[in-house]
Image 1: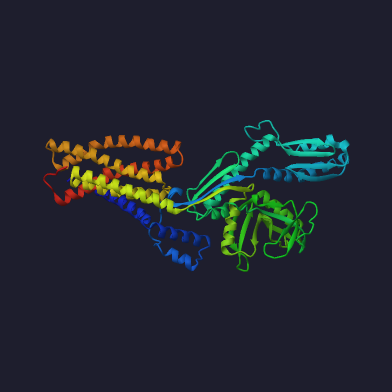
Image 2 (image 1 turned 45 degrees about the vertical axis):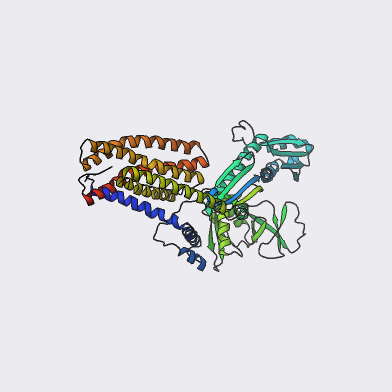
Length: 555
């Protein structure tokens, strides 16, 4: 019998048992997934659970591992969207936000430019009329002083606005360099916000990437339909806070210049006339969480950043006793009267929310508002039955491959071939355990990588057993032959597997999509196969030799 320290044997079998424990949940995929969804929903709701959630939670014991391998879009099904971002909306918003600065700048030279009046904006262009055309040069100088350098590789040395004169009007518009920089920022911000919104609901491994100049491809496994995905990412969740001018029940009321007529979300037939320019916006939020108001009704707590908190605090201090509209996506959630100064930038949004609605609103506000509206050009729901066909084919290929490998090893090496097959089974369990723990998505190429790993895994056993055969032919005892065989074959095993791991790493770094899925399962399989072929197989042989005490062995 070969000698292996007790601590090493315990460590080897401990790792094997952990691998089996963490791979078992994948045999009960649907039950474990429902359990995980229920646990996440209960945690989000602050520990309160509905009867349906408790029933789903009881499908799997809480004390057992509950990690499962996320399935890719090609196996599980899901939603596919191609969206076009309307970047022109951002130009108009940027120019509209400049009006207060332009007005304040011209106010300092009112004696030279006369009265200042904003003209209707068209196509993202700000027009400001002055009553004294003789002061145009001074007015242009003041407005041009508001320009800032464009921070982009293509806009070095350029300003963000172009200011010109047309008759008695000052025309302000974004420069070409700023438009290009804005396009880049808008698409990048949209990508990040979509990713955050998808991640917030626990969906793993989505594909979210830019296509062309102004399009975004979104593929999310596990989403029931394209409509469900659109409801999650298509909502802008644009939160703004406006001074209230008046309240009316006339849906056709004229709000007046620089005002808006907005409907109430809760009170049917009630409309609010609010100032068009908000005091603070949701872009200045740093956090939003579901909560309950003083009456126990679902609400949303929010917190502004430093700049937003200062503006919010200053406005509430100067307008005590006046209503202040909280507007979400052009609907007034509520218009509370400011009772006192609210410092710190912390507040609460109340309304006719359910717990689910307040949780979803908090998610959307926390992720941020989409900078521009998106138009969905293409939407598809990929049915899980397509993935099931692929899973069935992959399972069939894995079973056939495993059976042929097992027959070859047993026919070639007898009882020692059987040990190699048992170690191979442990290897497959450990692959799924690692995939489950790290949350790596399994795709159809990934299944191919696992099938390939089964053939590669026994290659190390072949090297070891052939070396043992050579030692037995030279008259070595069974224990000595096995000791030498495992010891001298180890360097060749490490060298061959190390080159394969390097190849897998390169495929993962350079490749994308299916190539990366193949690289992940192949790389993990190579590392686990080195462990099972060298250490687990030897531990099994040690148990066999200690139990049988054979004088001779046949390999």
